[in-house]
Image (cartoon, rainbow, N blue to C red):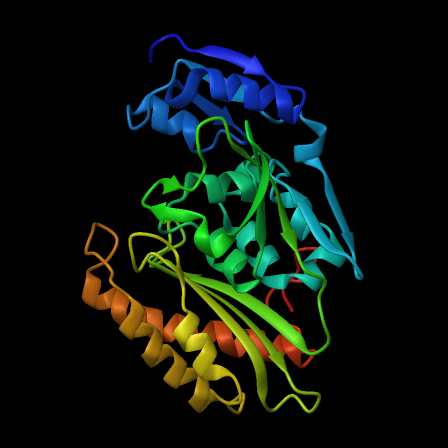
Length: 302
């Protein structure tokens, strides 16, 4: 590896200045779990690494039932699923945070970093799409907000411009009778990259039998994570039943354009995306009805 300069920014403005001055030759170090590997393997190039872990604003996690969640871009994953209030309000986010690498990576890596790496198979992005998260971005021209569903543009690329960095992710306050779920399929535990990932969010009526609103995010089935808007729209007004969720999975298959690689052939992914979509929707509906699904905030299954 060639010699690379290191700078630890202590404010958003300082980080923006460093990134703007070096352009493509500057890379952000958030958790470092992706960029260090990519630099070592020559997949990315850099003359300067800008460490953003020392910026207090990027390490801030604040939640209230009335205002929602403000998640700093560098907040490590473990703080999400270890926070009972956050894990209960945004369970799909906790699902994703819990399976990004092992606990060592979760102690360093962040949801913001996972998003900015912009892998088509990223575990956090389907959950963020399902939860309708917004990206707060800072740059030389000020600040702007971009929906997560519009953030990724192609494999490894996103809407960040020269000098810009992701400051935080913002989530609306949870409402009654809503639930969310993220699931991924991997053929064995040692494989840490999703063959297919599906994130679902549903709001049911008070009786819990009809879908009032829906969102669905998919990963590893296209050049970038997908917001399955057509499927979500079709779900509205439908009964929250296994038959409905199976048909939603069939419709998700029509949106998928997977590739064949060392992890799975395209035909297999097309089958699995339907299965995972139906399962994620089922889990979201159960949570909307108050049924415990998956892990509790303290890590125990229930």
